[in-house]
Each structure stands twice: as structure tokens, then as C-alpha cells.
Image (cartoon, rainbow, N blue to C red):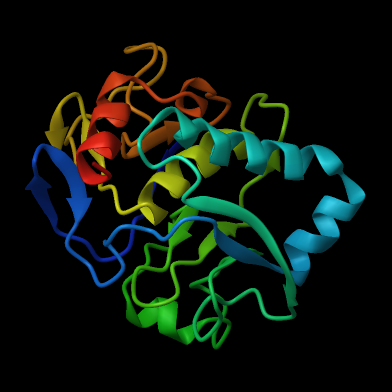
Amino acid sequence: MKNKIYLAAGMMFFSSLSGACTLTLPDATLLPFNTQFALSQTVYDAIQADSSIATAIENARDEWDKTDAADRIGGSSGVINSSDCPAGQPRQIGAMAHFVRVPGACPTLALRGVPQTAAAFVDHGGTGSITLNLSYAWSTNAGAGVLDIQNYFTHEFGHVLGLDHQYGTTCGNDPNPPTCATVPGHNTMNRLIVAQETCAQTLNINDINSANDFYP
């Protein structure tokens, strides 16, 4: 399935709480206001080299301010972690090359069954960290074969807030998930994002309703 990247939200099951597609995992509780994230050294260095990366991450965060989860996700805590591996780290934004395939790179993630092909991952096993897989090409300007940073962070922040994958108004993983081409403006929490897509940057009504149900 060329250029189709499936997203990982950790080892999950889904439940419906007043219609919200929420994760039944330890950190699938209401995120405290202004929860801040540390940066891994890799991401910090990338932001220093290209400020548009920070802007893309902030725009993804601010998209959730359209919902009752507004202001739950804060900014950078100012802490720079040398390790990109989220295991044992506080909440952080990191990026690793082949974060499962490299022996010993992040064994805890491997034990949690993170798919080797996952382009991005939220560590629901404990830290709530977001990790991007650097075996893919990332950019703030989506192009052929390139993954859009804001597109993915909007989705991953939804998982941080406790939301599961969702297609239409149904919780869980659609066996035939839509693309932006087939369903323009599909759910941000759709489990599939195709390379060069950008339509998941923006929440649709189903994403908003699900967040509002979880954050009354």
C-alpha cells in the first residue's frame, strides 16, 4: 500500500464514554490544564535549525483549542532530554530512526508492540510521550512521499488527550479507512494518513464532538 502510513496509538482498546472515542489505558484520563512537554535533543536541534517545525507543532496543539479540551496541552517545559526514547522519560516530543528495529534503541517500546512501520507513536504505557519515526521523510511543506508534521501532530495530540481512532462517528479502527482524496476533511483521528496529506491538520465535527464529550 504505497505511501499509506498507518498510525499507532499504543496497545489499545476502545470504549465509548458519552459518545467519546476514548482509550481504556492508564493515561486516558482528563489531561490536566497546561500539560507541558519536554523536547528530545533531536527535536530541539531540528527546531533550532528550522523554526517552522515549532510553529507546526504549536498549530497542531492549538487546533484542539476548538474543543472543550482547550488549554490542556501546553508548550515546551524547557527541559531537553538527551534520549529520544520515551520509556522512562517524562512527557516529551521525540524523534527516532527506526525506533523498534534498532536493537536496544528503545526496548520498552518494542515490548509494547509498537509496529515497525508506525510513523508516529504515543507512549500510552506510562509517559504519554510522542515519538516520530525518522525512517520517514518529514516536512512542514507536504510533498510527494513526505509526511506533514502538523498533520501528524494534530492526530497524536488527540491521543495524548485520551482519544482513540475514529472513523465517522464510530470508535476504533476502520478496516478500510478513508484518505483525504476519498473523503475530504475526514476525521483527524482517522487511523490512516497518506503521505503528502494535510486534511488531518484540521479537526472535523466528529473529532470536536468526541473531545467535547470527554472534556465536559
